[in-house]
Length: 204
Length: 264
Image (tube, rainbow over all chains, first blue to last red; front, side):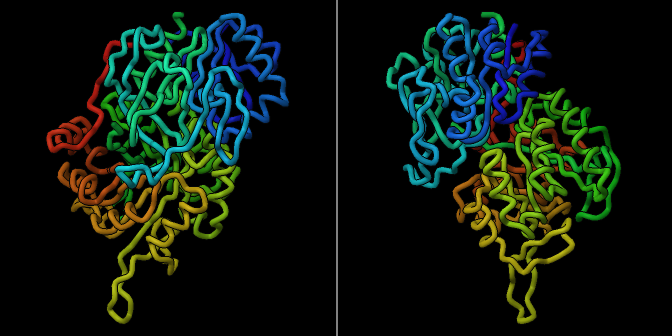
């Protein structure tokens, strides 16, 4: 069973409905036991890094997610769900993340040349796919996805970067590290192009 | 590269899509889910649903509309109109809205912007700003913020209010210039540009779109990050793909659709 982790951060309904449309049953789970039991796990989320980590830690979900990952079953992080996988996040101070992917998460700078970068980065941007990643099967570089975020991840190991996008410079749009995959954009809000990603994940 | 967004806006009254001219005179024209599916298929980048129902029962109807739409289309949805409390915003976001747009309530209680931004993030918090060019008794022009569906002036200046909303946590501004709204004569380029240059968050231009040239002008000279339009799409004067083709031919980065037609 594909399970979507509910940790009270944002709207899980769209993710669940998007899988439903693909005839993939998806269950919303919150207990650590259900997280450990899942065949595939989705870590979604919008909102603040620190709040999210605090909830995941205090609920026991963080440990369950780490246990799940150790079994080599596939995990897909979405938006904040990508950022939380990093070692550190710098949203309102320095916070420790789940530490599954080496690297950190920082804010776009509005002063970044060529100047007047609007933050949040909001809208449809094209991605460049790196290498041969099953999550991006059938998806060509140049395909557009819907992004809405003010922070972006910086993996230490370049091999973890599965796709990039450009916003005042190149940034990481997706990561893939063994069985752990995550995207900064919202596949569940990216119409047909997004459904293809969810399909690929369901087919893993 | 980030593309400029083309956003159809659907006014909703008691669960039905309507479109007003100059804010007040409304005609009935459709089912919200059907409309949303249509715009999804033709590659709209986002949808705005604006609730013009005044009544309390209207609020619950709107939550149901958002849920039905979000269950059938997979694209970003913003909901505005009549959001007065954090609880109103919560219900709409839980129903599937990506963003909520605050108008009158934000003017009356600016801290509401911060409360919603704290709970759902800056990215989900939009300021809907209804602006009017008014003449002062001494003949000077004043850009004034209006509330209550554009009926009541507030004495607040547009650019100053936009900056305040940004500092309080708004992640986007939809600037609707009422003098242009429903006229089909073009956006207010000067005011849009002034607001867009004054803030570091995206600005969506609204009010006055009558033909593709108007969208081109506001996305270039007006420095808008997105253009919202109602009548031209709603009455099928122009389609979203026609507008995007026009923009692309004139050097504006837009998402041309469909990509991955056979995916999924």
